[in-house]
Image (cartoon, rainbow, N blue to C red; front, side, top):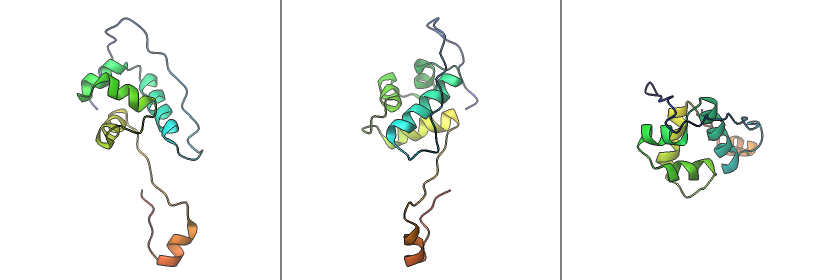
Length: 106
């Protein structure tokens, strides 16, 4: 993440978008909105991020639109570059009690 290219080659300013409410139930759209908000909040263009990560601009656009047909590796690469992470938690409180196994991830 030290190579954050904050130069804007097109001359257009990157307009920050608001971060979605992350306390709501997870959805691909919510993740896409969070990625867009983080990127624009850092004043990085689509081109800046796609070039820094060696992924195509159309792939990054798909990620930011919540398209679920992108490689998980590319999604995780973008999240890591922007400093985003997530936790997986089980919604079923009884699964831990019944099996004695926690499927919560931190």
